[in-house]
Image 1 (cartoon, protein in one colour):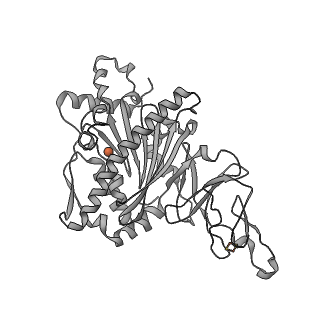
Image 2 (cartoon, protein in one colour):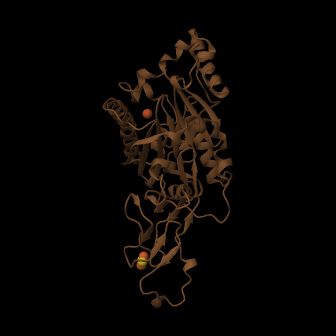
Image 3 (tube, helix red, strand yellow):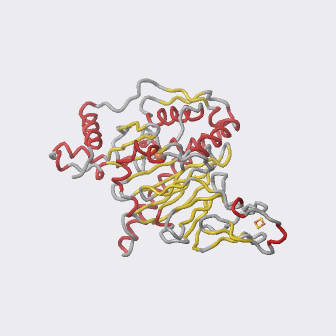
Length: 384
Ligand code: FES
Ligand SMILES: [Fe+2]
């Protein structure tokens, strides 16, 4: 089996926990002020910093394999147009016309050679350049080269498309940013996967509440009592900090069988669900045979959108395969919904003022690590 050294360590750690009855514990508890979930000023800081300066996953390469294919992304507050150019690169632009600001592309996805703004027909190329406009004489000697669509830093890596939702004068060292998680992402080979489903869910809860459902497994056997609980060891996750990202390895219940196998026969992937957090709002959740990629984006102090891609190793061609993946999709929708219903309940309780702080327990390591990285970013100590 091709387990990495890190994966062997995680397996041994979990087997150790099952013998000793211990589990991963952070040195102490952490308090998180409830105002972090309710204060509109705080949300604005989060949007300005976390949701403008860091790369966010916007899609899978399977959505734009051919030159001219494009999709739009409208949830961050920065309307974005993502294209594959004639030369094969991924480009991202602010989807705002340079004439008088109309949204240039309104379709969710498609294929085109040029994009014409619906308002007055200014036309842009796949590379964002302003190609022309009707009756140009009315614009005098307007410099077309200065009126192209505004470009956003975009990256194609490990089968995923990442965009920083604000322009940058300087080059961003994206590879270094991802480096702490690179080995793990490479191993998933997402570039060979196909998109089985893509969906977005708007929920009435602060975005952090949705995020936190994936940062600990202490809740599994209560919130998911009749669904996920029985598949996993109770509260025995391993958290590996790859600052500012986090590997959250959740062991399946049958991992205890590895005790009777030789180490060379161990298969990490078959025994874990990895909920990999990629700062600030992205998760790559690797199941034993498929992967969910999700991003959680605030749409207001008490609202967010959860965007998810379900990636499968090869297209579902047979009825049997379709049935199998559909069953997986239905289960995950149910499990996610269990978390969101609880999150919306938390949101509704904020107005009572009952809690001044939330206590992140020693088990809830992903919450603690994620909070630390966010505090660092908001204080200007963490940059791409
Ligand atoms: S606003 Fe786009 S062409 Fe006028
Ligand atoms: Fe959950």
